[in-house]
Image (tube, rainbow, N blue to C red):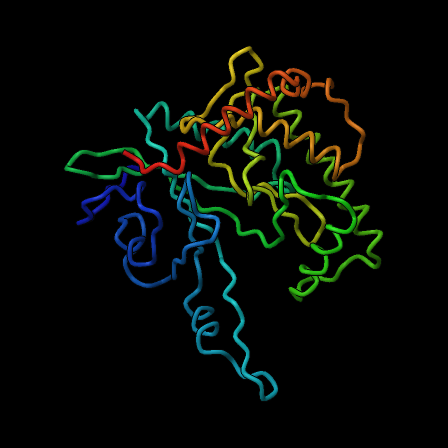
Amino acid sequence: MGAQMRSSWSDDIRDRPYLGHTDILQLNFIRGYARYVFRRHYRAGLRSHLLEVLDPEDVARETDGVLVEGLRIFPRAVPLKMLRIFRRRFKDLKEAKEEIRRVKIVVAGLAPDYIARPAEFLVDYIRSHQPEILLAGLQEYVAGEVIEPWGELGERHLHSLMDRMGAMNRPCWPRTEERWMDQVRIKAEEFVRRVKKLIMEAGLVPDLAGVGNLLLTRSGRIKLVDINNISRVSSGPEIYLDDRGYPVCDKSIAALFHLEEQLARTSPQRDDPPYGPFLNPERVGRVREAERMFQASATLPRV
């Protein structure tokens, strides 16, 4: 898609801390009439803007409430889709298409059960009368609880996630908690298996290390919901850093080991493929230093 953006903005939307409904309506690939409501999602952040695409009638019910047996309740509007606008700048069309190619490979490896399926598109973003390539996409909305990539994943924690999801009043749980726990372990093992296959056959790994990138759904499946930092796998002596200086490859593979050990519980060994080169203590120390430098630089204002 080669659409152009009609805008009076003087600053780059990719640098803005957040976007709102009015900002989105100024994008020419979004129709100007209020067919949908766009609301910033809490996971919007460093690498992309993320907005809920909502039905205006659902938003009205959320705002004004509805009467149910004499009581007024305020049901939260559930997104129809998620709109993602990538902050990354591409030097040319070839580089942008390469990013989409990586996404398609990851989707093919994890869909339909283990990823929030995206549909990306490219547009021309006009700044100072010069077009720049901008990547955006509409993504499946997934309801679930965040899996902390480095957190506790034992039965007590899973019970707390189950309780929170049980309050959502969505389709019925399996008959027993034990059966649900078993489903989580089995499906976590399958998720790990598929990501390992991506690493070893495609040489790619999605960002598993970021907080909020993985959700646990009511069905007990892990879903990858953030696809905006897919890394090539590099086990050479140099630590691969992404465009912002984060060691995403090493951190994602370390997170995968943690998921396999703590959630799937298949007793992986640190020298098993693909973990071996990435979990070497000396390399882990260098990755930790690279992460420290990234965090220090992330606190500085962007020039």
